[in-house]
Length: 160
Image (cartoon, rainbow, N blue to C red):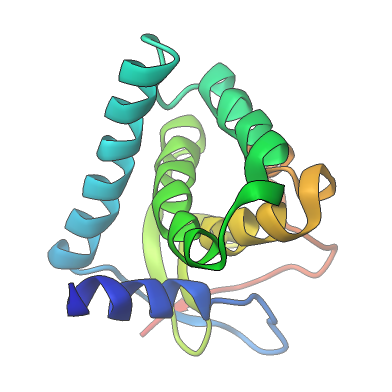
């Protein structure tokens, strides 16, 4: 359980603020294991409870996005701390399946999905933003535009 809280703390601390060339490293197998485990549990739960076809596709991301929009006002503080780790793991994997890329740990920032050398997205942060700000920060819109840099500034990420 302690590892889970450490992992979630690392995830929730991730914020993109590239004023310099970001340094990153690929995630270790244990970290990838946690991410995959959280995502697979979400998929299994959604398939069992509401959508037997729920997977990592566009329609499933939209379903989850709508669920967050509809239910986020009822989330407890504890739920708001836990769901970004679970939903963010799922969202990151969905992005990887659609656009390719890999999970990375950006030094000083946190876990992200690197689609190419110019594009690193932070799905854990985006889920938290959606929970806190509603549909204006939709994970679905984030997913659909994940292959585009967030701003006009070109990023050149360098491995550690």
